[in-house]
Image 1: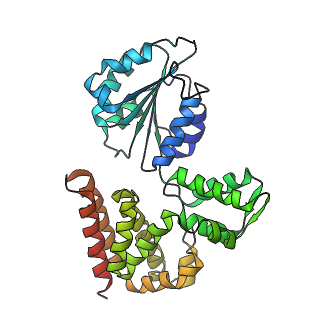
Image 2: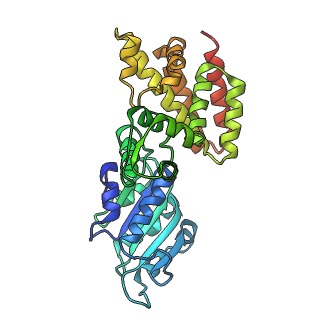
Image 3: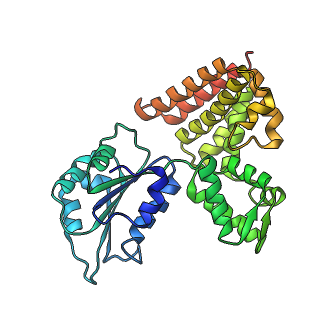
Length: 340
């Protein structure tokens, strides 16, 4: 069965009793790990208990499909239901998982952890099509969903957040759920107790997250600052950021330009167009964003988005090095920004 993103957290905490296998996948690796951990803890108190938690990998069950059924049927020496966790799964595991769901053994919960899977993925189709399986997507936190994560995490420490502080946080977090929670936890520690987070608090405490650099990369590309964009790209790659995540970050920036530019083309003022964007444009870069609207009318933005989409597709399917594909696309757009 297919679980909607809105229901995924609740499902991971308390999965349906008839579900024998849960596939957790998506571009937000931190959120994938968080929901996998919730699923494991829905069955066992200690996720490190070797008697009740078995660890397999995608390549293992691809090589030996019967291994999955054997682990699912095994009994815990200490009693209690078991969990079989499968890491690094991909479409090559679909055959073994299909065989298990056709003739399930034991009562273990199988938790399958995968990366970003396209809609045509064989593994997704198996999990979404079986009444005994569930597919939980983990998309990047954005807009209202991201604000909810930030607000709830702070509220647990009796801390409120001002509007401008929230706007900043929502603009610079969200690329990874665990990174977001880590940064907000650091902010709560900085506050030292109940109160309200202000923009000054955020700037003092959450001023160097990698998402800020990703934001800087998008602005540099749209401004036509090719050398600066390349330097930021090199830094992000060195920090381990996947090229597809970087391409999507730049794409989100251009989609915001497209939305605001389209509103202006329909007669709205610049301020009215910017007011449509969620999260709002951070006030310190508002002038820069407005200048980019003049540089990038909607038809030019559409061309840039085509380049970014093609680069992402090439990263996934061409077999060429992702870094070279992404760098070439960003350089192409950056150069185009300089040609009015």
